[in-house]
Picture 1 (cartoon, rainbow, N blue to C red):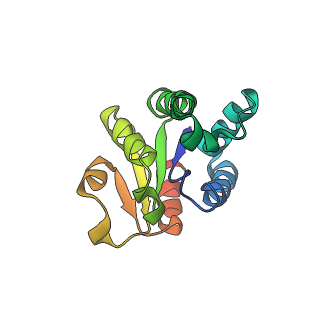
Picture 2 (cartoon, rainbow, N blue to C red):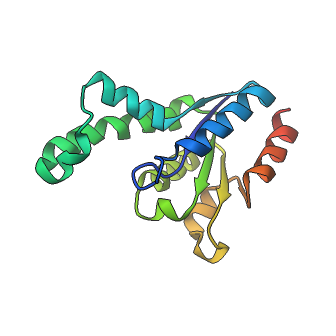
Length: 153
C-alpha cells in the first residue's frame, strides 16, 4: 500500500517535513506501507533541474516560476490520482494560505481514493468541502494510527 502525504509545504515552517518523516517511519514499521512524500518529490525536481533559487522567480520572473511550479503540480496530480492507495492529509492553519492541499484532497475524492484528514484547526474552521471529500477526520495522529492499524494491520 502507498500513502500520499498531503499538507502544507509552501507556507509551512519546515515545509511539512517533520510530520511527514514521523508518519513515514511509523507506516513502514507498523504496516509495511510506503509513501509518496511531496517534499522529497519537490526536492528531486529542484535538484534535477538545478533550480534551488526558484522561490525568487516569483518576484523576478513570474512566467519562469509558473512553468517550474507546473512540474510540482503535475507530479502531485499523478501521485494522487494514479499511484496512491490512500491519502493522509494534515489540515492545519498553514494550508489556508496555499492551494495544493485543497486540490489534492478534491482530486483524491473525485478518483475514489480515501482521504484521512488529521485536523488541527477548530472544527468550525474546517471547510465543509474538505469534510465532504474526506473518508475520515481525526483529531490527532494517534487516532489516525489506531484507525490504520485496525484497517490494515
